[in-house]
Length: 223
Image 1: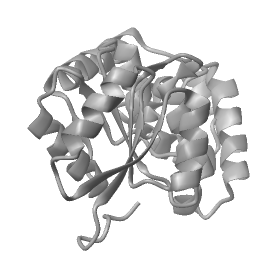
Image 2: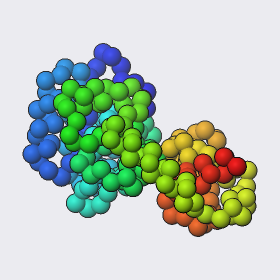
Image 3: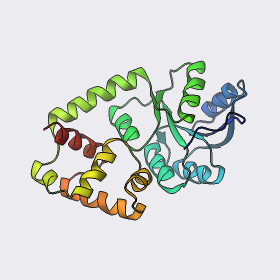
């Protein structure tokens, strides 16, 4: 999504199942004139539906929600909205798998709730402008996780070599953290075709997650 015009505030949707957290965030952002909270949601289903209805510039979302993962909601929002918002995770959940999954689901940022108010306001402005941001702790954990995955290996080389040239191109874009919609636009394909390519890639590599595909591509590229 392009940077919101400077003439209007950044429109933010809050997604957190704790009302006290939402109230605190709304209070924080009320002190800045260039960020408006346009809605709230407490579940993944509500996050997806409210995002489609309100069309925010940024969705500020927790990872853990009562009916599922915010990462899944992130994928649905980015896949289903023509002009998708930027997704910024704000959570106390510092698990490395969640961080990795969020990044490869297409999130623009991952922050821990211990962040200061001024830094959070700055982060929202950063992702609204189309830039990515990670909490320093999250960055360190993410790098270590990627190194660990690369050392452990994933997927047989024979399966990697069996990918068609177009599947290789799709895999490369997955490794860059692109969403299905972005991959489709880059390769001039329909979203349905991209989903079919991903299904074939996952089946050939015997994997189930985009993060695993990204690690395999990293290993393949370094040969």
